[in-house]
Every structure is written in structure tokens, then in C-alpha cells.
Length: 274
Ligand SMILES: [Zn+2]
Ligand SMILES: [Zn+2]
Image (cartoon, rainbow, N blue to C red; front, side):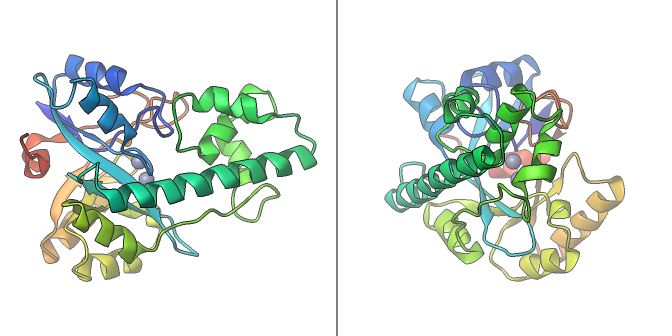
């Protein structure tokens, strides 16, 4: 059997509903499934409130993914087994969500000023159930509107730093995120270290004693990257984890759930039976 501890639903920027993700995972016989939406635990509470978590057919590991404030690098932190009803967590998530909405309006205004006839409603249609509105929703709406061919093109021309419709949003500090995860009873993981693009920073974080785990298994890591990160994790006594970062979006790698999995022996260390 195999497991996947990094997936997104349509409560953030994925395309699968939590139910669809679950049934896809069950069909593949995944043993452990980590759900790690950006800045929201709504998919988990949705499953919980509908009697689908805990689940007989699959072991769900509740998670979340944050992005930390860093001027130069994309530093993502995953938290597993956090108490999703923790008040401080809810307050912080509300603050982030609000800032995402403010940025959304501002980006839309800038796109319009730059001659793109795109409306907020077009993006909201794509965002669907998601309250964690992100640039990828906007980019997908731009592609759908025929303004660009790919999401990547939209980012490269309009949405990324230095481009006309780039608007920063509030990002919590690294320490704040890690403390929040720990205060909610969770395990803090440095996500996809290769995407940070600075292995010195990765080692600095690993050696800081602030995190418990490193996401060594990741679709965009080469075998050599994986070997290096495993060595790093062992050096600092960090749990090994990994996942596909599945979004259910055709243009993204991985395309399909099950395309990239990890061994159960790694996933089981994160599982807390209900
Ligand atoms: Zn990420
Ligand atoms: Zn992710």
C-alpha cells in the first residue's frame, strides 16, 4: 500500500471536493491521506461534520499549509494533526483569508486597468467553494477568458513579483506559524525544500529546532535531491515525510492522485487514531 500526505481540495486551490478526494484515494487503496489546504482547515471540518472523518476506509491525517513571510523565498510550512477548532488558529486563518480577499480586489482592479476585461465573478466561479482565494484562481480565470494560454504565462506576465498586477498579501512570520501549529498540538513540517531555492536556508531551518519534519519526498525533487534531504533530515533528527501536492489541475504536475506516493512506514508516524 501507499500513502500521500500532501493534497489540496477545492476549499483552497484544488479542484476536487473533499468527498471526491476521499473516494479517489480509496479507489487507489491509499492507506494514509494528508489533506493540506492553503490557509484553511475547512475541508477537514466539512468531512468531520458530514461523518466522513474519521473514515473507515482510509486513515486521514488532518493538515494545513502556510506560506511564511520571506522577501526572497517561497517558504511553505505544513502542519499535521492540528486542532482545527482552536480559537487562535481560527483568528489567524480569518486574518489571512481577509487579506487574500483584499488582495483579490486589488489585483482585479489592476488587471482591468491593464486592459483585461475580466470580472470578479469570473474568478469566483472558478474559486467555487474556496474562501482561500488565491492567485491561481485568478490565473485560471484569465486562461479561461482566453487572455493567456497557461496559468504560468499569467503569472509570468501579470501576477508575479515585479509584474503589473502583483499585489503582496499579509504573510505570517515563520516563527508565528510554527508556534501556532505547536499550540494547536500539531507537527511542523518544512514543505518541498527544493522549491525554496536556497539549501543554506533549508539547513538553517532544519537545524533551528523549530520544526519536527522535512518533506523529503516530493514530485519535483530529483533522486539526488531526495537523498540529500533525507541526509539532512537524519542529521537533525527530523521525521521524513512527503506527498504529491495534488491539486487536481490538468496543467500541474502531478496530474493524477496516485501518480506520486510515499511508503506507509513514513506516513504512519503522523497518524493519530481518533
Ligand atoms: Zn506549497
Ligand atoms: Zn501544497
